[in-house]
Amino acid sequence: MFERMKQLIGDWEGTYEWSQGRTESGKLKVNYYLTGNGSALVENLIMEGVPTMTTVYHLDGVDLRMTHYCGARNQPRLKASRIDETASEIEFSFVDVTNTNTKGPGYVSAFRIQFPENDRLNLVFTFAGGTGKGPIENISLKRVSPEHG
Image 1 (cartoon, rainbow, N blue to C red):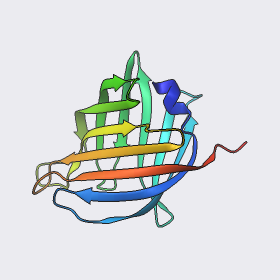
Image 2: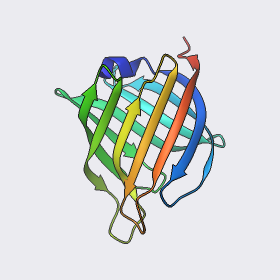
Image 3: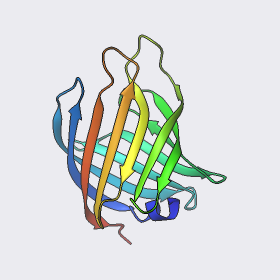
Image 4: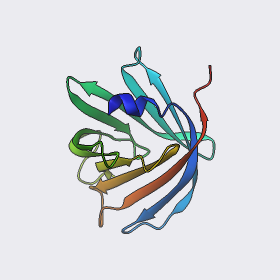
């Protein structure tokens, strides 16, 4: 599945919408590129022209992992807990988080990435911690252009 994820490189745009306690929505852009001699895929979520969150996906042996550098200034780490090639979906489960505490803002506690069709992508972030019920952020994306060069 990581090889399939590498095909995301390029520019994407779409919308985000919060639920379960938050009500914001809007537009965003996303850029994917490879680093580390092709061993890591970097995802930048860009709002109003500013990268606000970055996720790095990589393999650890046979495990697919991710570290999310959140706009809440914490860094949750997750591991793929379910990979469904037929449904074109990956679910990530929480491993740990750095730079947070019980009084701090929420953090990503689960993540799902779905490939519903070519040049379309859905990202679902589930949050925990902080105050109140853990919100969910749904992002729907469409490819704008593949990698240049």
